Each structure stands twice: as C-alpha cells, then as structure tokens.
Image (tube, rainbow, N blue to C red; front, side, top):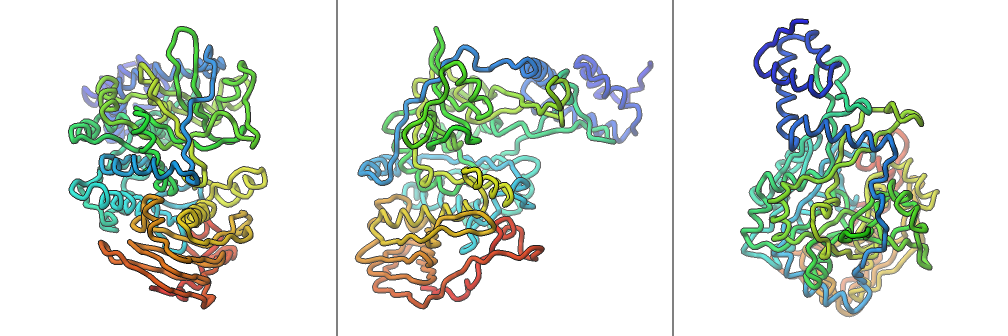
Length: 575
C-alpha cells in the first residue's frame, strides 16, 4: 500500500520502525492528522537521540533481555556469592572521632548528587517527595534540610569555594523541583551552585517481542523512567564530572531523596574512603533475610576478578541457591549487608571511567507476567538501570569498598502509605513511612546528644495511626548546630537534661550549659555567631502534642500521610 509521507523525517522513522518490526504502529499512523503525525515524529527524534545508540539499540537490548527473562536465565550464573569485606563505623566507639577528623575536612572537596526523580504517589502524597516536611515541629522539607547541611559543611571546610549540588530530576519532578527552589530562593544557596539534570524516559514494551506500547487513543509511544542509573550518563553529558575533576575535587556523594539521616554519618564515611583509598564506597546497614532491600555481595567465578556489587532482593534467592543458602549471625542479621544507595566515588577515577564508557550502565528488565506462561504482561514494562551497578563498568574492583553503619545513624526510608506501613509493622518489618522517618530523625538526634554527654531520657513507644514509633523526645538538630560528634560534644557542658515528652529545636551555633528541659523550647543563634545558653530551666509542661487526625480531615496532605498533626506549637518557649 502506498504511504504518503508528510516529510522526509517521517519517512526516515517509518523505515526505522519497519526494521524494528513495529507493524502495529505503522498501521496506526495514517489514521491521524498531519499535526499529530508531526508531533509523533518529534517524539521519535527525541527518543532516538536521548538513548545511547538510539531506538535500534534499545530494541535489540530489550529483545535479548526479554528472551532471557522468559527463559529464567540467571544473570549471576556461575558466580559464587561471598560476604563482602566490610569496614564498620560505630558511633559509640572511640574510633568515631578519628574517622570524622580524617573525613570532615574532605567535605570541602566533595560534590553532592541528589537523585530526585520520583513523586510521592506510593506515600499517598500529591507532589514531589523532596518538598515533604521531614518533621512537623519545624516543617523543614527534605530539600531544604539537604541544602542547609551542604552549606553548613561549606562554612566549616570550604568557605572560599562553593560546594556543588547536582539534582537529577525527571519529567514528573522537573518543573515542581524548580518551583520549590525558586519559590524559596534556593534555600539560601546561590542559584549557580545548583545544577538540575533531567533524565529522559524510554519506550514502554508490550510483549516479549519488544513491541513499543502506544498511549491509548493517541499516536504517541508510552514512555517510562529508565532508572536512576541514568545519573552517570547525565554527569558525563553535562561535563560536570570533568569540571569537578579539573577543580581538584576528590569525592562525589550520591544520596537519595528521602533519607535525612545520612548526612550525620558523612564525615566518618569520607574518613573511611580516604583512609582505605576506596575508588567506590558503598554504605550499607545490617540486613535480615527477606527484607525488600538489595544486598552487597562479592561475586567470584573462575578466571575472573571478583565483583563487589549490590544484588537486588528479587535475585538473591536464585543467587544463594547453589551456595548453601544465606547465613545469619547471632542477632539474625545476614552476612550480606543491605544497600541504602548512598555511594561515595573518588572523582579522578570516576571521571576517567565516564570518559571511556560515557556512563552507560548495564540494564535489566523486570516484566510483571500475567500468568505462568510468561507470554503476556500485566502492564507494559521497560528497560531499567541502577546507579549502584556502576562497578560493572570497572575492570578491577579491588578498590570497591563497603562501609557498614548502624541503621539508626544513617538510614530511614520514607516510601510507604499508612496502610502499607501498618502491614509492614505487623509483619515485623520497618514501617518506612513519613511518620517513622520523622521519629527516626528524632531518635538519631536524641542519641547524638546522649553521646555528646546530655541526659536525654527515653520513654515508652507510642502509636500513631497504627504505626508503632519510638518513645523519644522530639529533638531537631539543625545542621549549623554541629556536623561532627566532637563538635557537638564541645557544646554540651554541665548537666543537660531532656525529658521524654519534651520538644527541643537547636538551630545555629549554640552551647548548652546546665540546661533542664521538660517542655518545648526553640533555641536559635544568629548566622555566624555562637550563642551560649546557661542555666536554662524550662518546666512549664508546655508540651507539643502529636494528635491523630480524624477521617476526612481538611489538613494538608503532608499531615494526612502521617495520620497526625502537631498541636500546641504556639505554646513553645523561644530562646
């Protein structure tokens, strides 16, 4: 049948789609207007340009991986998993000061990369996750907290040279992230210090033959996110990594959008990276078998260098099957620790690797099959890549290190809605909700003050909206209060006591001496000035209460996803 092309570009892509066996799309094109066909050509141009190797490479890779998936090919066939050699950071030991002393100055030689391509749909939140307040006491959102931490590092360790922050966004989060930054004057960070990198999507796939899915009723290919592994390609394409290398920066830290605890551990983590001269340092936490979290493994096979890498939780059972199963210690934790997607790279080697590979990370596919025949999908799938698969690009993984920290000092996920969180708790798993993330931060801050010499009392666990939470005072330590344990230790003098029902916010360079708090107190210091607070006694019982919300409440969504609100905030003592 004769086909009347609207222009040469349409003919070019018509031929390409024919080679890729996308007959169902070719049959659909003549049914649409010239304007719709032109828009489709523009979409094809973009998809063909943004994916390395173009649509041809995407199709061929998809066909191969779909075939392997349908045939249950084990991607780790022939590998023997061994627990990875692991460095340990213990905040309760004497080594913490040594590690922080080594690593803290390197914060001034570090660049930060925030992976923020996701919406809060799984949480039941109607926006981007980085705008959600971490706590209901100060209502500081995740992004503001991260920016303030980087600025606190900068003031201490790099006052004459800005510490760069790159944020990877997606089509879903790009405009909303810019709006959040611009509407808040970039939270005090100069605009030029932040780089926004937008990842592109890839075609969704209908079946094992890698037919591209069309948006129902439209001449448009359905697209889906390609995964956070794109961050490496974007760093290469934007020339950011080469720029950082030329500036003499030593490290780049990758971190996730809703894990506020990690910044407290970064000085010590960098201390390990520097002390051990790691090219890559993967931060891990103790993990129990069955948790929905990847595990760091050292994979060995004959005549090949060992590969230390994260293995996703849905691939662990097949990996361990031929090696006698997964071993656990006396506390029930696996000898294969859990990945939290905080990575520290050495910039010079990272820049060299990206120059050779352009940051193209190996892909995988995880179709949800309709039945056991594995011939139909429940919904279209796509190729994905993960940033933690970067070690596969290396020829020698001898300098890939693993650093384990107690979960309470470095990791809290914020990803489950309340109903899912309650189900998780009943199953003995972490809630990983907005409420548990908030209380994990309170608990970390309380423990840091204890380690610094304060008497921070513990209470009984509390339950809000069905989620069991630790009984701790609501302690908020803003970054400027202190970034290392030694620094904070020097700010606690005499007898400092905080009762379990209390709320304490310390915002600024503050020294506490002989302070007793049984109530709610907000203490601030002017930027650049140290403030000494002596002989303060707050005993008015002016507690800030967290009250469960009624059904169908008009409260903002960021409160609804917790199931409670903070009452009596106006009664707090301001110092």
